Image 1 (tube, one colour):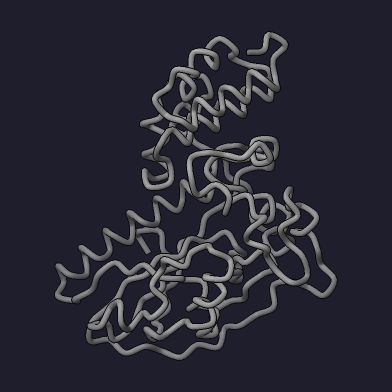
Image 2 (cartoon, one colour):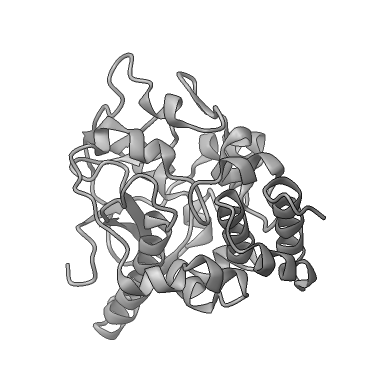
Length: 294
């Protein structure tokens, strides 16, 4: 499709009670509507749109997922506008996409909690539209993404959040990055802006995917010194503003630079930032990564 979506599944707008119970138990994602029919009462079905993307190389701190997640979101919004203009009544829908896909026989959930779908692995972004007057279809595309005995994602997880029992959300670095402030543990283990992609990089299910690389625009936007000096507007546009408020990208850039021994003067100046997360990151950096400490 011209907007970047490779597949579309027309699924019933049902309830996700099991997912809701687990979300409340973990404290992560429980604010999402789990009764999709109640949230979108006019919907005959929800169109689950699959937006595949290619990973960046291991060691890249620019986030492949979040750049493509923002692109997919914009593509979904454009699709809503296009379909409504053609007389197909629909709206953008927000709910636990992975849970509904798995419940309806689409793909498999790996030990890391991500939806895996052949041939894209877990390198997919999910978006959905609630569509009026269109009936759902039945699917049987379940698959097994985790071979018996495979623990590649568990071994790669820097915080030990993955095991044979699945994902321990409380220990997941990505889950701990919801707010702007980062714990000292996350600062030490941080490998990527906004989230963590270690499990996806290690997954054999993703091994056949060729690598991509950030374009010149992304390289410039995520240049460390630029971010530390407070110029995060271009990077925020690439990954989405809802994920990067309160100085998140600046604070992360300070951590990355400090761990390489770079930009001490600029980091020291960040102690006067209006953002608490930035001041906290600067204090941590000066206290732990430079000889000339506070």
